Length: 282
Image (tube, rainbow, N blue to C red; front, side):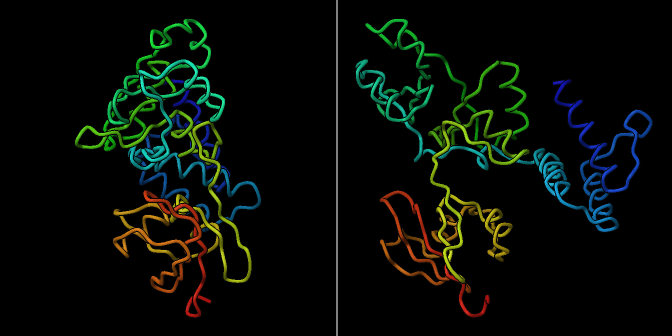
């Protein structure tokens, strides 16, 4: 992990210099996360940043916060997993590769709670008579595990994908190295991202938003004041937390000073909503 550590030490020193703080990692004692956060905050307050420096500070702060991020916070959720049964024929497998555009497909027996590995598109052609002989092994990790620890393990194993399980051993989701890197550097579109994360202002006080958009992202993008809680992280979770049921299509839901119109919903998830700022928020 030495190269990664070197990168972040250099990044940290550069960011501290940007905000007017001189720090030599070879001469100074090691700083803790709280101290670094304090230094950066102090520097920003005393010398406001301009232009591209804002994004550099955001990356640095994300890197500091990464030490406490858990896998449950950065997975591709169970409902978005696309896999194939181990007893499927080669034609079914080819069709899934074509439809999804993925390079790897998860393989399971019986149901998604019994994932046995994954198949790479190139390996599929190695033995088309019995493609299951080319299934690669996959590792399982608890959703409570720290993301930084998984990053270390995946790098050591030269793996890019893992399965995340809940406390009962059921599949909670999957996670890739791209997902982990995104926690620090921001969004990186990879093949497992469902390209429906919408967040746009359609008119005055009206916004079209994907259910999977995270509360903190929306607050930052549109200067909302949506409350955050350990019980949810997305706007869909926020709605479900309050109404304790799945809403109906076109239903209007008023929570605090916001009205949510359900534009698209399935039996398992809220996909797209329209958020309307009520008068008290204007």
